[in-house]
Image 1 (cartoon, rainbow, N blue to C red):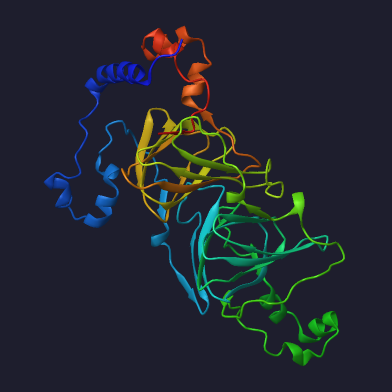
Image 2 (cartoon, one colour):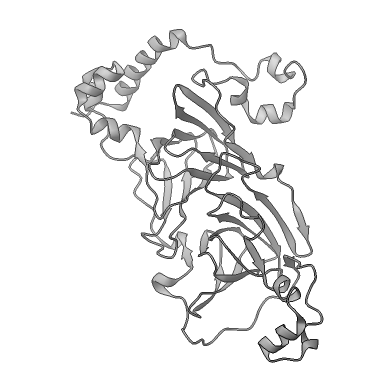
Length: 402
């Protein structure tokens, strides 16, 4: 038996009204006491961007650690060919699995040749870039990536990135919470500069003078000219098919979204075999839409909000919950198995974000589906709702609800 959504909401609202008798009144962030600042001094601009920090949600309870970090609060490192700003565990201590960075390259600028002790995942969201990589077998890949395209370099894979348009920008994610600590990144010119000159010359079979101008210290990002040379052969061939380090998101069909609330792409080892330690989703949610109540059984969830404005409440168990507000450039880390939702708070603008999991796959368990696949009388007795409501709950994942 299917019950209409309006009837479901009516019954749930009635139940909430009973519970709400003991719930504090929801604060209004437009009241003068909030607009004029809190006693003791406050940053009005930041407060207005985070109304839920002002006690707006009466369902919030207890001490829940901060789960949000704004890239705008990160130190921006300026280089001749671009800039970089990071979010590591020292910035967001609740992100135990993942760290990240925004990187910007001007046309021709090169993130110098390097490799990492950890895996690197990249998402292009402005301009286009040229990636080049070589693996342990001597297989290589050189490709141009545009908006929505992703790369994944396993730990130890040698690589570089070059900007192709006038301005280019991408998100970098690493499967380590502190990717910038010593012993994590290795730059080629830094290595050569720190190796005896005669050994370097012997290694390459060249005159030592060839390496007189190797940069010291290494530049990280430097100005250059757009590459015109092609790699045409190699002892093990090119990285293609399931071995490819590139995934072109928008050239694939999105996942089914029965809730009709937006577009949901899944990118993990099931469709991008190279990506064995980081799984991701790319999500576009309609105005007013909801990423349904759910949790992830296999990993923490790290998020990057790219466009639009969002609200999310995170339930960490033991009667503890906290609501956060997000805008472009914000990141978040939701604890392993914590219950949560993401809501588009705009009436006119889509919300676009990326979810990352330190896992080989994306996995979630929705609240509605769980209850729908549990004996209805048990659900009704637990939540004190009519059994007809319990019997009519959706058995399919809705994912994004309009």
